[in-house]
Every structure is written in C-alpha cells, then in structure tokens.
Image 1 (tube, rainbow, N blue to C red):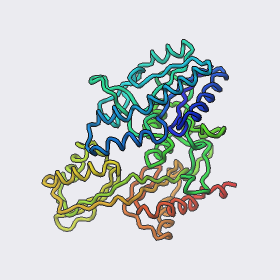
Image 2 (cartoon, one colour):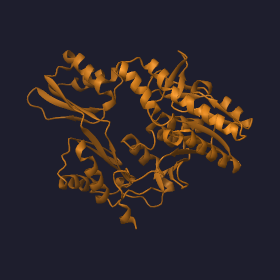
Image 3 (cartoon, rainbow, N blue to C red):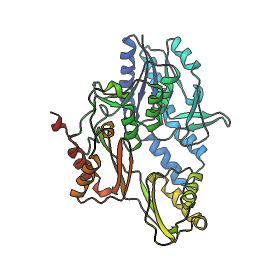
Image 4 (spheres, rainbow, N blue to C red):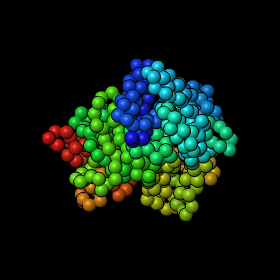
Length: 409
C-alpha cells in the first residue's frame, strides 16, 4: 500500500463535472489499494477575480486582508470534493490550511511554509478517510491569521504535505500532459519530456514555465520527493521530475521558456560610487520587491546608468518606491518599459558543451531581435527582449537547438 498525494489545479476543478472527474481519479487510486491525500486549487479564474476585487479598491492593500480574501477560493473546492467523495461512499473530510495546520512565516501574500504538523492528516488517513486539503494557504501562528503562499502555491502545499506525511509520491494533475520543451500553444513542434531533472525544472519554473511553482520544485529537490506532472484530462504517463542520475541521455538543452511578468526600469545618471547599487536594492528590498536582471552601463565621468527588472505585478509598487526615494538614489530621471519578455534556454548539458551561447545569440540576431539584458547560470541563459518578438524567438530557438518534435523522429 502506497501513500500518494494528489494535487489538482484550477482547470481540473473548474466546475462540478470536473470535480466529479477528480473524485473518480481519487477512487481509482484507492481501488489500487493505495491511501490518498488530496490538495486542491481554487476553481479556474476564481483567484484572479478575488485579486481584482482587491486591486479595484486600491493597489496598496493590507496584505493580511488580501490573504483573507484570496484564500476563500480553495475552501469552496475542498468542500465540494469532500461532498462528492462522500456521495460515492468514500470517507472524506476537508481541511483548510489552518486546520492541518500549515504554519507559515508572516510574509503575507507570498508566505513560506515553516512547518506542517502532520498528526491530523495521519489520523485522518489511519481512520480510512481521504483528507482534502486547501492548497495555497496556511496560518501565521503569532497573529493566528490566514496566509497565502503566492500564485501557484498549491503546488508547494502539495509537495510540503507529501514531505510531512512521508508520502511515496506526489502527483501534480494539471491541464497539460506533462512538461514540454516549450509552450505547445505557441510552438506546435514542442514535445513532452519523459523525464526532467530537479535542477532543470527549477530553472524552468523560475523562468516562466507555468507547470510548477518554483518553491514546490525546491522542496521536491531538497527532500527527493518523487514528483510527477500529468493531466487530469488525458490518461497519459506524464513527466517524471527526478535526480540527474536517473536520466541516462542528457540533452544539451531541455527547454525554452518565457516570462512576460517583467518590467524594466532604468535609473539615468546615478552616482558611479561604491554604495549606489546597494542603495537601489535596499529600497526595493524594503518593499519586498525582488530584482531580477541587472545591467550597469559604462561610466561617463562620475555618472552611470543602471537598468534592472522587477515582476510586472509589482510595477506600481516599484515605481512608487523609486519616486519616493529620489534623494537617496540620486538619479537624474528614470524610464520604464513594461512591454518586455524574458526568454531563456535551459539544460544540464550546458555544463559540458561549449558554443551554446553562440547558437542562441546568432539565432536571435538572424531574426533581427535585439537583446536588452542578459543573465546566466550554469544551466541557463536568459535574455530580455521586446515582447512583440516572443513567439518568433521561441520558435527560432526551439528549432535551433533541435527540440522540434520532427527532429526527434
């Protein structure tokens, strides 16, 4: 008897018919003799609507009250699935994050899990129940307030629950059949990967792949949780996320990703002295804004220009912080561009193969695509380009690195 955690995303529980299908998938696992715990997202589109309600009032809301609002979507789906399972003769009960409890820090809106106390879930499983757990949410213990884990946080909830109850496997059900070499909606020649390493998936997730949340992959990699991504719509094996030693043939490049949640700021004529960069990043850090790509142009005398990107979802907050701290940052003026996209190539084979950067930049140059910023790691290269070239760049790079489905046949 195996212990399985199943997580279902928003499209998988989008309506009552889909919830009934989820219940049938849970029953199938139970009929195979396994025990099952389920983690659910809100119905597709619900969280976006709840976020919009908050933003329609003010973009500078209290994150604690924001979490109270946006956490309600999951409460609906867990109750509905529990009712559906009960109607099928299966013992089940729902758990909000605070009932598990899933204890988080106080970074409301994007909290991190500190601890999951598994006793309630283990007792439920021992009693023959299927615990149905609200993803995306927890409780901040000092204030006893609801907290949320950031968009896509149900993935993190699922992996963390799997770690806490020592599950044999964590299955992430979504609306795609697995992890693809790139977005198949844009590149028709994209192909599904049978296996991908934790490291590659971590890069893909952080660089814009919407299949898994970054922190869920971090947890799976840290605790070596067997992780599968598969579809709740199609009966197919999906993609296994695993350690590098489980993959025999390693491709140079495994995927091409993109992220449109980028906003570019340039601070013009700031002082070219030690401490200037620290001042910029301190201002952003105080607002809880993560800086991504960074460029500092060549010095012209005592002045220089600094360009950096932030998540576009935090554009207004970043803009306000820059304007409010002009005396500290000492810039002459600043400009911004929200019509940008970050395109990246990812592959563990980059560690042992040269010429990857050459192929990437040559391919973009041949398509007359200008590169505004570059960042690299051991297994990825990212570039910032105008968003109007997103599809062209993805298709060109996918072909250039031999990832097209036809190239594999």
